[in-house]
Length: 266
Image (cartoon, rainbow, N blue to C red):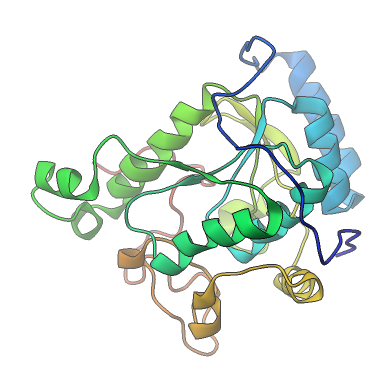
């Protein structure tokens, strides 16, 4: 991965409040003209660097362009690039109430390093309220429903004030992600979805992190290459797939943000 970003990036960015937007907002519609534009740009950007893709996305969709992050290595790499390319970009995290303390701690490290304040989007109910409503931990009885309630609904709400969002997926992470275009229409959230790291590899991501001293989750040094909510994430063993620790022991492989199946199993 070619990176022109500086190791000592310290961008002065405003607060990333998703509500602080102008000019007047009107939602995008997936017209034939827009879909044709997205397909054309996706093909054009197949050979572009992640920085070039992010620059195009910001130029095309700001101030209604945002990024969702779980503070993974890919997400931290995008934050690092956005801090230099488009530091005004709002960035948010879907705070389920079940995230690891090590994950939440990265929010402060991002603020200190880049001057960017990642906004936490919270579900309607606290963890205590949610588990009381359902008679116990839903992640044990129906993890798909838990992800839908605690994550997807929050992004659906945020999508109502956006035109486009950046995701940190790589095509080599899973079968669903392998189908991701660089730029495409996200039917689930009625947004343009941009995946600047789609063609990147794990090795390229970590080279960027080490080259530029990008903050990362301490759990990655303890056998957790992919980190989600603590009840549904475990460390992996030597030789396992990097996402093998997510929802281990179930047939679930995605939270639903990046999968084709967008409905909970009820």
